[in-house]
Length: 278
Image (cartoon, rainbow, N blue to C red; front, side, top):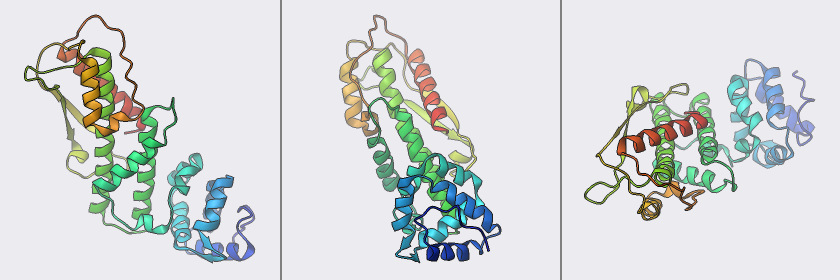
């Protein structure tokens, strides 16, 4: 019988017996016990376990999923150990049964961005969202709840929305810094992002990199006098850029050409994605 003495006190003897029986279904019950103890170290995580993994002393489906994941993945165990709030953000095992699409991902990303504290970088919200969804999709993979095709699409959708949010934010910050790249017809010039490789073919896996090509439209110089107008208009039509927005314009006396503007935008975007881990 596996030693369960390392489990927190919310695990009564009856609960420990149930956990032991579950872990015996997996190749290394001892390792599963150690990892379960690691991810439930904080008081908050233990309170969550008391109501999300058990109903009284009866086990809930989430416990089986968690034991399965921890027994098979040191990577996911390490993620939960570093960020206990990630685990408690899931309410029940049903969170892993549904297939998520664009509307669900938008709602979840907005939730993570709304939780940002003043002074925290925008990309921290993106990183939290990414970890949340990577964990959810990985659980779906390990517990055989979706096909490879569905999982690849979900991973690609997550990458899409992170890229979109990062672009919206990077554009707004570059606009404030270098001026507004207005085209002759009066609208802002933008950049097209072409995704190559597995992302471009909607076949991302957990270890895929993003291969991106940036192409911008138009030529000309930025407009410093209309920066604030352009910035406010951008925020109005691009909701992700509104988080942690600051209308203070950087002092600048010279315009730049579009090539310089979009080079700076591309650099800012790459730096943001690098910090997120894309």
